Length: 286
Image (cartoon, rainbow, N blue to C red; front, side, top):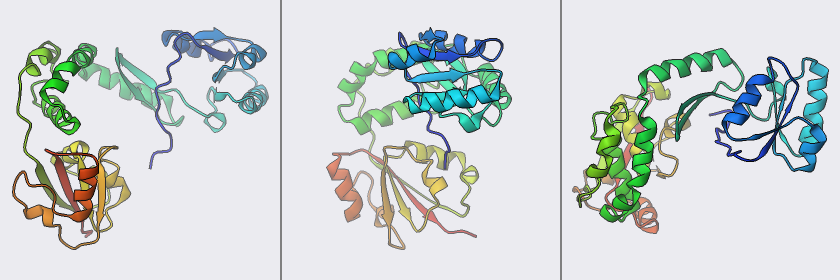
């Protein structure tokens, strides 16, 4: 279970309140300006203008507490530097491959840890990731033409971006191949079913193949009390079916045949899904 909801807040051209000065406030000023925000240093002005975000960086702890209470009562979301107990939100360490942003946070536990994880990622992620993101955006019309169904488009993108795929994000030259890769009339893949049994409730014990399948699945059929931490590795928009049966009849169906399970078939029909990847997941703890 995550303790914070990661969000990317668009503040370009908008006012952001920063209270305090010196070493604690300066990084927040730079961060706001980097995102295109407008710095406001007067509390009443910020309230009058309907500002939504505030950073508090006073040296005096009591002044921080008072400002946090007053601003929160006025409807602002508050970040108090080095006081996670007073924060409505925290700021992550940011890896910028514009327009791709990777934010590493610890919920205020250790900014130093977040920074060093980000620094390690910076060394291994190509500088051209932003170009790849822009090329994928430009290819959207061609993708829609080649794959009219949303599920087919997701599968095509997943196939291209997977490790070793034609557009592997870790390949610095992938961005140059996007247009040609999606320009043809490629046929969608047939539906697939992937079944596996897990014995551990720890998602870190999943194999790479299992974790990848969960992350790409259009539907996850859980047989038995599959732990929530495992189900959390599935795509957020994947169909989830909790199956009361001891065996799933989808496992032995012919390739390309629609799901036989009445529950799964009904949900697939509601979303007009075809050419899908279904993961059948059973949990049998040791």
